Image (cartoon, rainbow, N blue to C red; front, top):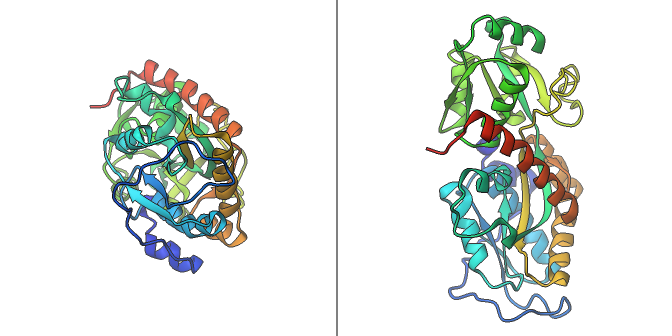
Length: 333
């Protein structure tokens, strides 16, 4: 989705730096500490994906700000692999002392539904804040013909199974969003998983696939040029950037949702005062005006929710995606 944003590009536009120190070997927590005494050593932020993606950029953008607030270095450590579960396992195995936390993406509420035999339980973690939301939109080739959602649905129903939709991989939020749309609209579209978003866009432009759910940053230039057409936005309201594009709710599909949400979580048994300090520090950091503006430029909207609000959204997502995984029989291959 929006992982094509490069670290250099985003950091250059903000004028921010990154914490470049490596993680000291053998960082392990002592026992629970009071909020007044904590922190007394560097804090690790485990990143579930590789360097250079938008989540990685966001984490490194916020690291020096949070470090300044807490008085200790914040170090980002990439632990990519197994749809984010490598990073989650590392956090689950770390001491519950507040010195190890993780960034989460949209797969956070989905992973246990697709991988029931995880080496940890999801209740081992506490969500601290949903920091940003990355709205997505349903894009179709302009040469396809339909100009509205109703026209697309009518045309798709006239040729069941002949049209296809692309996603960034099986079990991703955009794949499940596409499956939600298929169920809600009663259309038969073949799913085509891709390894990278640019390939999806290229095939959309050539009408080799007929629909995809894409991040705003991935397709705004093609919508502006008229090569792609956005039929519906997956967000709570219309965006100023696309004032004429209705939301999925406006076109009759309120349950269709697919967005790139980034947040932070920690071990559930971390002392409450420490969790509160981390939540406050990250929410304050991402709300800085210069951060809000730069993230908006790249299709990310700052929400900085409370821990309780983040937990509520995750529960809603798990219920929504759990149903579509069952109905569509989605399995990781």
